[in-house]
Amino acid sequence: MMIEKIFIIFSVVTICMMFAMAFSKAMALPDVYFSYSSGDCVKVENFAEGDNYSCEKLPNRYYHVYVE
Image (cartoon, rainbow, N blue to C red; front, side, top):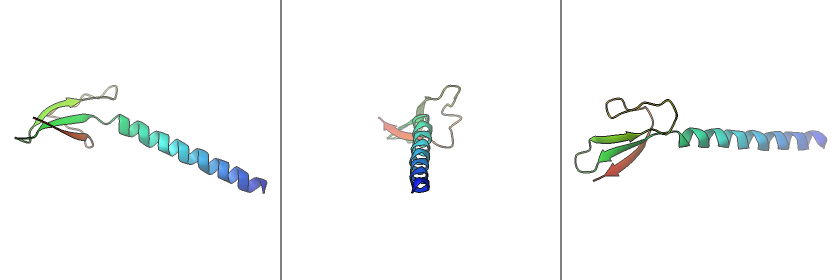
């Protein structure tokens, strides 16, 4: 009975920590703005400290945003 409660608490804490880590990584992804008409990169908005991405050096993962 006590082992089951400990296991449930451990599982809930682990799931919450994994969710927090995934949320943190998702919030750090940069926004890359692309022209809707030409499809070219217009600008990159970096959110994570130390990131220095640009249109010439795009990251592997980013949020794709269309602009006019």
